[in-house]
Picture 1 (tube, helix red, strand yellow):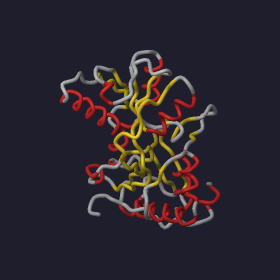
Picture 2: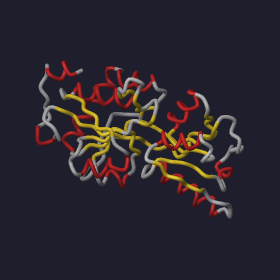
Picture 3: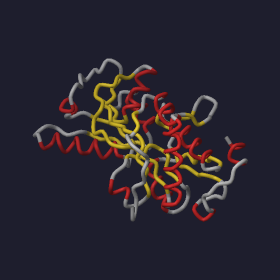
Picture 4: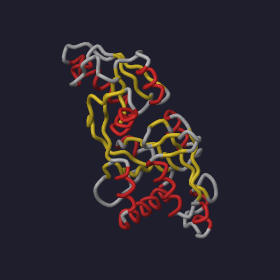
Length: 258
């Protein structure tokens, strides 16, 4: 990967990068199989591979900064990294703050411990239940919307417990401290595959997932790299390995003044 980058010359000016010759990406590696740390301590997952491939095609060295989601947007805007590569959900409000590249379709699942002891089969069954979710993300926002919807129906709301990451939320679920966890479909499926958990609801609130770049010039170069991957088939091949649905059409950038 690094050898390939060193053999070509990037067209990205130094002023558009946090670190000369590198593409610095923030990531929260607690969402297997999309982004996680393996037993040897190495970053793995679909989004890691995607970031590495984009960097290679831009003739840059991929560098990842492991951090919690709550630091992502402030860190991007203050110039700590070039790109948020953690599966950030796209919203028009966020696109007013940074240059977003929606590329992946994701939705939200509800996970329980194996056997679904609470008998959760619909969102109404969550009334009065305690749920865990990563703090500050789209998933927390949707959990709070579910809470409001239940209250509006005259039902008990949710007790929402926030965690620094989804790994901690699933640990609390396993320990019996929660009735359910709220996360993306792919992560819920992976935890169910590993054993100990069931996905009892999925496909809720389907929303595009994006990369987010610090500046327009870098974002547009990344979009070109992804479009090249789409043309040669490597983009679809990568997402297929993880059962992820791509956004249809050519990759585009949405951001301030675009």
